[in-house]
Image 1 (cartoon, rainbow, N blue to C red):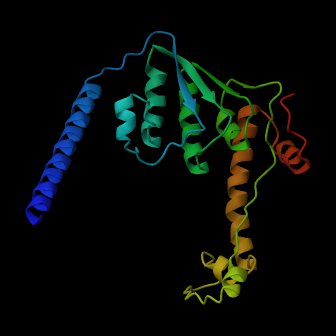
Image 2 (cartoon, helix red, strand yellow):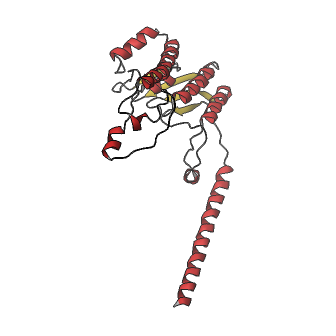
Image 3 (cartoon, helix red, strand yellow):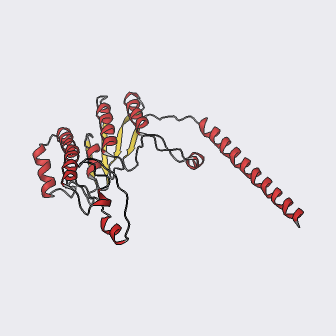
Length: 245
């Protein structure tokens, strides 16, 4: 019996190693095949930028996508270089921005926006479109020559806010005593675990960085669309912009 189990597990191990090698060989062949594929850009092409997909700081590896042939999402630096290259490529006529959602942060969105402004100096067109257009998507799309929204869609323009979740009451009910260390009144990372609401210091610092982002967004959009800063802020404060018309 002991000999049987010894032979059984030896055979099982051999099978596992065999299939692992086959699996690695398959990935290697598929990767080499895809790497040898050359991408050609046809004349009168348009570069599509889908804001609903996040452009991360670095490229995320996806072996499955490489095998299936699905498009890999470029990182932010690569996306900016592609926009720059498209401005000089005679095969590219313009840029089409899918402007429904924007999965990118404001820092990344700002870099994309700057790259698109530079692209416009080539004299090529930029068009933005969304079934509905979110505020952060419009922040990028506002550089376009024309921005279109579906007639039955929605346009989001409502300013900015921040919400935090606090766990202090839950921790107290569970009789948990967390060991928290912080120094200075503006160290707010641990506030959700030691208070039930935002401290005045946290409100102050949050207001500063949030208003900085908001003011920058308003200023660049006002400049791109030839609107006054006061009118854009007024529209947001009164929530008067929500439909395409």
